[in-house]
Length: 210
Image 1: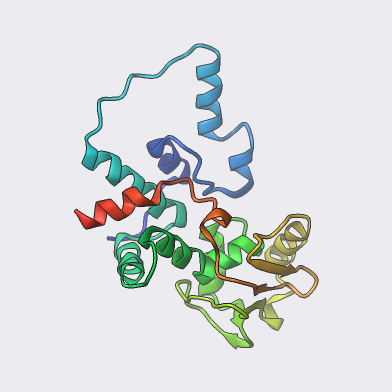
Image 2: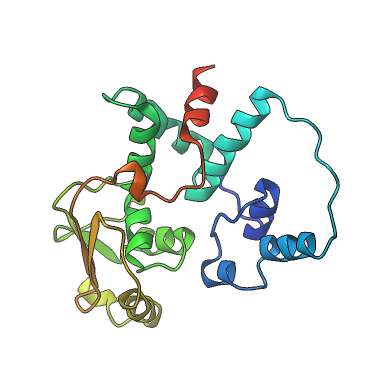
């Protein structure tokens, strides 16, 4: 399955929640979900949705999580299969793996204002891990890894601007941000309570286990 290249807001509207795919726009009144919620408050109601089957509920939860991280179905399922072979709760393992992807870490550190932008920056070779250039968005970071912007990329306006904005925000507890050096360190593996993915991961596990 190819990667979706249409309007990002259409995905949020399809799922009925904010997936935060368009950076700062998602926090403004221009967000379609915010507009929809405002219309509901004012008394305008949309069409009642048809009853969803058990399969449909699990499918939507899977699609929601896949779109949240901006992955193709093939990539997404591959990560689930890895998580399913690990010890512990498969759902928690799955979310942990998705969070540890390099493109997501770049986004979480604030060096990309969306996962889509972070993925593009990684693909263009603007980041290194432990001093080695890595241009694979699905690369999994580990505890102790240092993710930093390449020296030659530090003067790029977009990266400098993102780094300045990142300095005013708080990175997740499992990451340590150094906005001056434009780098971050993985302090620990992400725990479930540190991941803000808006899903019930057990439903995703049940979808693939059917």
